[in-house]
Image (cartoon, rainbow, N blue to C red):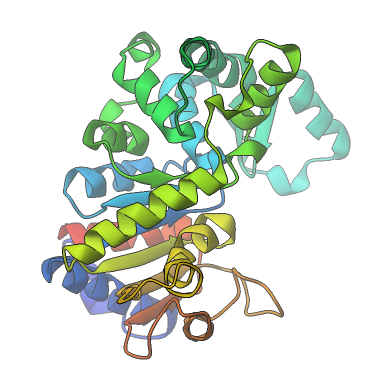
Length: 323
């Protein structure tokens, strides 16, 4: 039995049915000529979402990405240091002293998996710093994801690959030069490293890496470029937070702040989140709230799957791919 057949047969009610309905809606949106933005919050790269997301990108089922700085860097960390990761199945039982022992071993824990500092973080720092310094010296500036595209496409990291590169979603995105925004990149490990180099004087121009306002203007141009071609854009959100809130705001910004005419609303919306509906929480807001902000319309297909994205997203991607 295929994954698609399994979902069709078993996923009939509650969150299971919501997952199936949302996956069908995703396929319908793509089949009707629409494009799809996927947003990545949390630590989906450390959860190795690339195993399914990379194929979605290659298959033309994902046309843009919005992700946190952590997801941007952690996909490359996994690519070059996978064999050095340490999994901690009993992470809930760790004492503060055991957590300190992990730090002493230079292992940074993300739930049940630990990222090795030297093999992952410092290895990437050395390579990306070369690109930062080169751009800084030449008076050029690029977005955070463009620097990551550069180091991947340069081949400088190939000797360190420890997984099949077809399972790196960022490499798949780089090969397609996929449009991307990385809002709040400054709070990522790589963003902290960049700030350190600026403070040390190794990087003279803080704007060598472009920031959030430049990302928003770039994003607005991308969105209106598709609108001019009458292409409908869908919004597939994994988790909440800035990875989702930043790109979705481009619609009311264009409409209300730039006062542009005929700004289309997002044509499909789905969120996978285990956040409970709560007061003032973006992650816990139901899709209909976005109608009041001029992001979605009354007739926009809307879905919310209240479950763990590390379980649901690969299943939905398999369904969309017809596996």
